[in-house]
Image (cartoon, rainbow, N blue to C red; front, side, top):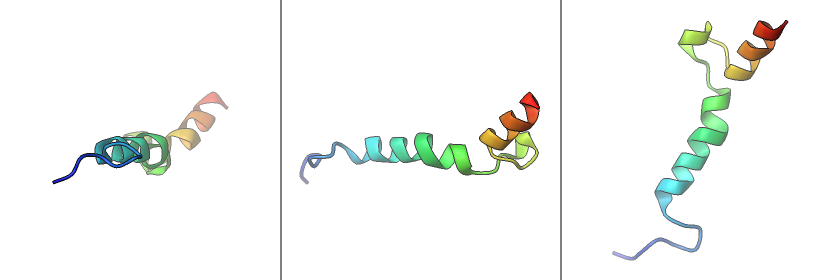
Length: 45
């Protein structure tokens, strides 16, 4: 088994994907099946 590659450990890549893309675009049932950006826009209006 080898160590992490030049980009860092896979966990860091997965965390980056989840936090920077997936959670911002997926539909959340607690927000009425809207993504967070749409929810905050509707809340501010």
